[in-house]
Image 1 (cartoon, one colour):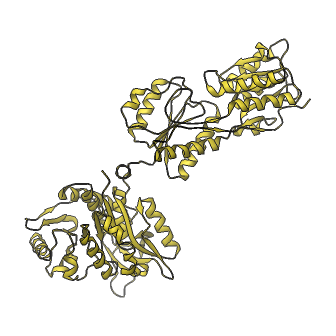
Image 2 (cartoon, rainbow, N blue to C red):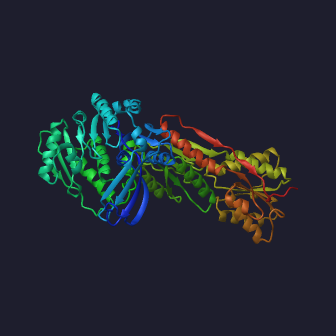
Image 3 (cartoon, rainbow, N blue to C red):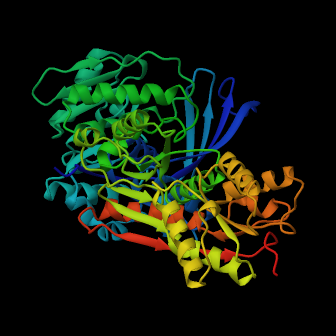
Length: 583
């Protein structure tokens, strides 16, 4: 079932907030304790509260053609709000609010409408379809009253529920009130609308009755620390108490309440449950300073709304080999640039740990999986069976069968390139320190070595081939074995740079030099390779591109789950430095 849609029509301001000991009297100057600038406006505050609570929300508003307006739009977009209906008004400033907050967390506010005053009926006409298609319309009174009236009329004609927060306090025509389904005034606003002082429960009941007589079905009068008076037309009302917290700043308490209430209502909650949820949101808001800085987003709520968590999980077998870290760097950078979070799990080559990590990622509802593991056996199918299908991309190393896309380096070609380079340099006694042959990249690089040797009609001596583990220590041990041969090789192709680094150390400890005594070429082009003495000639594997392409492919798979699985092969290239001597 599609998520219910909310449209918020209202104001956007930049709030200038000054904390003071007590409010100034006329003609008095008071010293402030703290000053900050925050994004606000009743419409924006309520939209943010709804967005952070998980609503599917479109915001109709105006900002000035200034930097602050642009910044506010970007921030609203980050809060999962559709900003396509926010107009930029030329030669106008974004709305401004000047706010004093005293020690008790109470506030007084003065505003300059700025671009908010340009949210005219003509502008609204362009966006009437959004109201028509919505399930609810939430409004306040910082926009022109004729625009609020027109929006309510469009909503009523199309069975879109109208929720009105009648703030700032002002008298309203009965023609507008008759179009409202739910109204949420505070005590002052209720008195403006009804002429009845709301000082106690009896006053709230009388004011609510007047509003019901004007055609409003549900009335919620917010009573500050006492809670909310709630009544439905024809039924006895009651106070629903709020949560008791130490208030730091009540600027956006009402706005947070309204945004959270409407969100809960659209999720199918009963009114009283929705009010309790809104109380909780407002309680969080008043314990923190600022208008839109104070209500923390609910990642779970947002994920339920969008059916996405904007989170990618990555299963990785890490080791001492810097190659892994450099690939992860590319993945993380791409995730960040595209607005995704990355959860990284290290399997450490352990199948049980792999299954546990996979379970953890799936429980966190990741949108997709990147797998770069050296284990021969894949994750347990039993784990996958307990969760909905998760888009998967395997990266370079994964040797096991698993449905999904694959991105890998053309390791066979890379092995050929490295070996041909040594042959072209004049070497014939060439050894290969290969990686583990149960790993497809290691096997392909070794096969590329064999192919190049055969094409050059050069013998591959058995003692010149050592299968190792892609680690520094493996390269060190393998090189020592080669140096102990009666007729050591003249040049080495190491299946990766980590083993080449280990080989350098073995050569150094024997009192020999690279490339004067023996030449070496590596594979991967890790960052360390250019800082070796001498710098290591190697085959560049596009690690950043591998990470970037993997993330792009995964997001494409997430958006197109029925597309055929594909294999993307990245082309390696030679990086010539100083570890190979030309003969």
